[in-house]
Picture 1: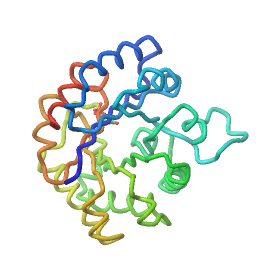
Picture 2: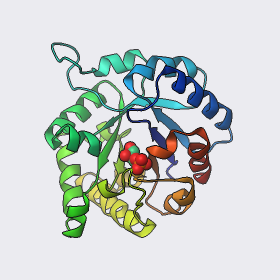
Picture 3: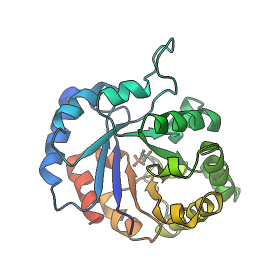
Picture 4: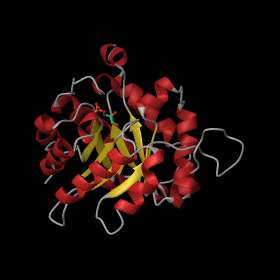
Length: 251
Ligand SMILES: O=C[C@H](O)COP(=O)(O)O
């Protein structure tokens, strides 16, 4: 039985004082009785504060991106070693906002995933189709290409801590959630693909989260699908109240 993992991607939100308020509220609501694993992914500038606030907490944290080199002349970038130095356990890679706004390619994402694994950071690897691709009927094809290219050259043993997040681009920040049937269909497809690429064993273990307008109102229905193992939450993770309700829905 896969444990549900609920991650909050704060995106480019929350300064230090908002970070302190939000994490303080979350700590009150997330206790030993919380069944899901909870991860928060604040912006880089809040990671050190997050590390301090989450010392001795069961809440885990990660970053929203990183570069694939350890150090050097890469102005504006953040290395996996820097993330490790502030205690990050996870890193979101291949988010559709990185793919579209910052033109990140499958091959760049693949390099980042490899480096994250090398440094024992757990990637949350995002995939998903655009509205145009869904309407053309190529959702599976797009997701298959992203998974195959993103994981190229990575062995089964290296994937033991990788999480896949299926996020249909048309559902991100739009209020349009995929129906639980639409999401389940893709999750099931991705799990079968992992079985074909690796093994039944890995396919059964790998956590596949859904992301895209997850809210307290739809979380239970989405999280009750057999192949949906958690959520990557954007907008609704910025308020403790709504994020805690989503976490409760996984209980
Ligand atoms: O990483 C999170 C996703 O992009 C979902 O964002 P959203 O919940 O605001 O749609």
